[in-house]
Length: 366
Image (cartoon, rainbow, N blue to C red; front, side):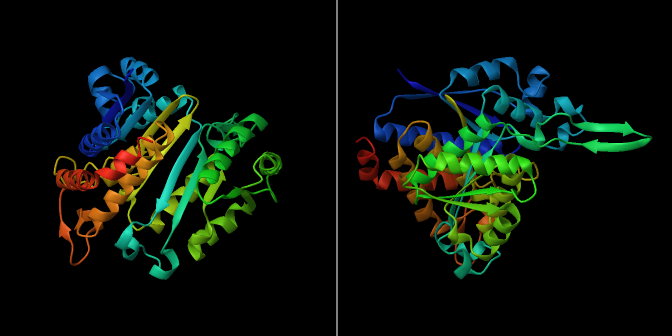
């Protein structure tokens, strides 16, 4: 029975980058002998244009039936005047919520000579390979009560940071599982010197850590973690943290690489998973064949690793991307001496590189 992948291109450059990623997805699956089928569905602004809602019911039904979702990007100025509940971003948030995607995995890795694209010194970021695991469905973004209230004649804004023990357990276990498959080092980030929520977080992380004696567990306050990411990023392997801390730290880690156009991500939970590039919809370059498809292509690699349990295919795709970057760049990562190419051509170059290294794909069958 074929495994089903739902492709949701979304808005702006989303359809352009997912088109190239889908070609890589199919080529890698064929090389590895995987029975895989794709279908498409709208989300975001295009979903609103077609069905009056950023997540049409049929799109959600297809996402629930799929083994994984490959998403491009949502949003754009065309829809900025819509009611807040109808904006494209609400479609993505609802999709994550409906699929129960509680863990966001965001790698920050330097690919080849892109070390010079970072704003930090090359000797600081060379060899950087970090996985930030962010809890995605709890914390201050979802806690109640929340809102703006009138109290004693004064307007007060209130948000509530809250985590239950089971919520912490499940995200921390993801952290240990991922760290075990990497370099066996897990840094749990909190603010336990100030927040009771973090005191509970640290207690649970320590308890779960006893089940993973082969993984080195380190606790770190979030302010120190932010400082260490800039001072010595290579000291980190896998980071697990809550929603708001993870939101901030994953963006900081992303910029270590020099280009957000290179960064994939995965959101997982239960039997569902969603894979998407970290970048936005970039409406200013949409339709101009100027987008960088590599983050979407690398997201396909994560799909093979985490949903289809074919990590060798992920490695194969990453190696192809690294090889292509030795000579070719899109505009966002262009540097002297390189040949500039567009979105479609960059996708073709990755496919050509994969075709020239078939033995790695054959090895992925076993």
